[in-house]
Length: 128
Ligand code: CO
Image (cartoon, rainbow, N blue to C red; front, top):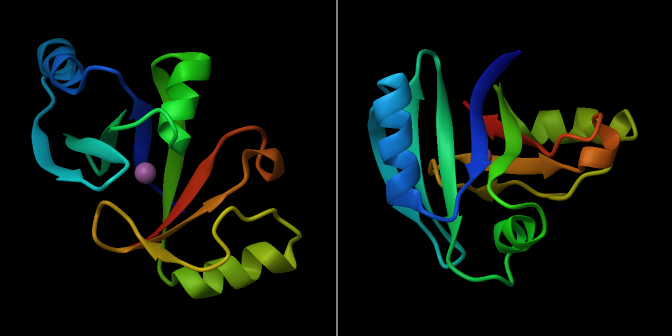
């Protein structure tokens, strides 16, 4: 089990990047966008911090931000084979948000597990 990244919801992406650079000396490794959000990835040793700014309010991160404000959104664990990990998760009775893998902002297959199944923390699996 390896922590792949931590996802943080932000309302000001450049401001958040500046804060991580100034406070922690973090460096942006890459940026990515899709129709729902803009993201920046900061190197944190073997893991990353994934800063997520929603492009619209009617998106999962947009709704999260409106409801809870900026802050910790999800954690992500690396798995060697995402389909096998989802099969195992189903066999254990976990509630999946993504029943099939989809391509995430890192360009590799991901899937989310419902927070209700894993101690209240939205959890992402990343094939890596
Ligand atoms: Co993520």
